[in-house]
Image 1 (tube, helix red, strand yellow):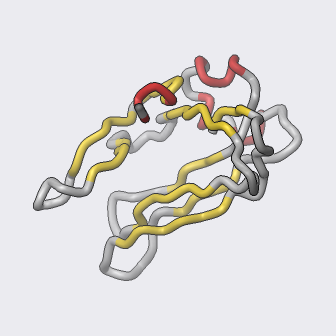
Image 2: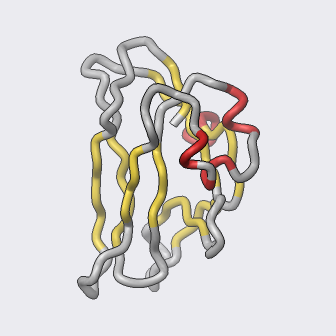
Length: 123
């Protein structure tokens, strides 16, 4: 199940926060930053990884996403606040989930880094 691929979770909760309670997702309610979630992924034929999230006009912010094969990173509290100290070949990709339009819509971004077929890394 999808729960088996979550390898670390600090500050994220799975629930539906819309009026109808039918649109589920991981939500981080903290305003100070530092929430961290790590998902184990295995590459497929084309090696592309897409990340989908909601963009809205209030109470949303910026997340950092990257692929990593270091197991140390999934256990380090506050790691997501340390953007400048990442020791890997590529800096995290910024996922900006706030905009000026008074609407909440889904957005999908392809990660710059590829995950080769059969390769397993953590997002």
